[in-house]
Image (cartoon, rainbow, N blue to C red; front, side, top):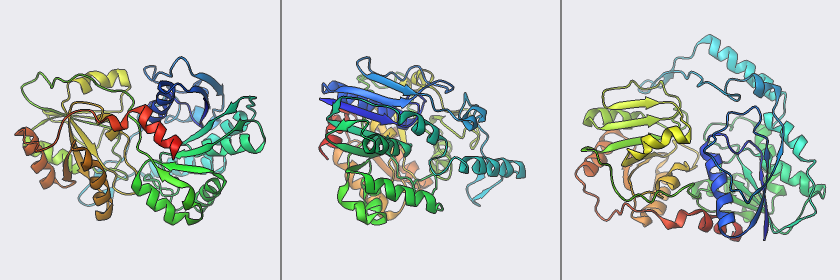
Length: 404
């Protein structure tokens, strides 16, 4: 059977989303599917060479890098942009006038590209793609949402033949945790893309319910399936160190995730912690807490290998589930699962994940995180089993997507 994967960005840029995209592809390959990948060319991008596309995949690339991307630090071999240091207790950001001016200029330039922003050029290039193959499945994957726009254009212009088209939305657009809720243009375009869809797959039960309410006219097409893990860690041994090593690996911009309570609890209890992600200047290093920016996989692996307690932090709002939890669930390591969001969000997430007896749960407060850390330090795991969850392997998760 044949599958066409449409990915509107460079798939080998280091991001959790791209790791999930590659895991979907691996799942299809493991199941024996013949996979074609239509994606953005990696030229001009800072790619992670340790992010590997299976050799059996037929790759078709179109160059669509914009002038804005070439000039932008954040998109072209970027340095880590400085984030405003945040006072979590007064909730005030100290952002300079110059930073605000630069941000305003960037938003203005981006607006000139239209609702799909910098991805519009790639869509205009890639819509030339034609194939005589009959694909059993066409999977358009966002982010970015332009993947779905490209899929529609190829179908509408009869450039591809297929049996079933599935839009996979790893993140919603309007209600994304990073904040697009003020844009009516984006809401209208998201509504249009969903109306064009045949099947719509989300990766969180919370996102599914939110989207059904927001776009009720397309609710009958919607379902959800968990994300796959990218690689499985078969090492069963715990750290050889005398003490536990905790690791938080992921971004933690305050608008999306509040890492401050964990940081405070770690300082109070005096545990060994590595924090790897952006922004890397919100917290001060100590003799026990080491701060790194986002690292490439080959740089991150030695730190992960020395870690035996993985820290997972839920988003503050939006209902999206960070993909790290699925990767962590493929290890034999202890997982500290920090709940955040509304009471209803936390209830739904805990109800789903606690069925696996895999996680040490706590609320995102200093006091409850300290309670959970003390359980871990005392090896008081109750019925929790620190072993991989096969439910999230790539082959099983992609089957759930295909079957709907």
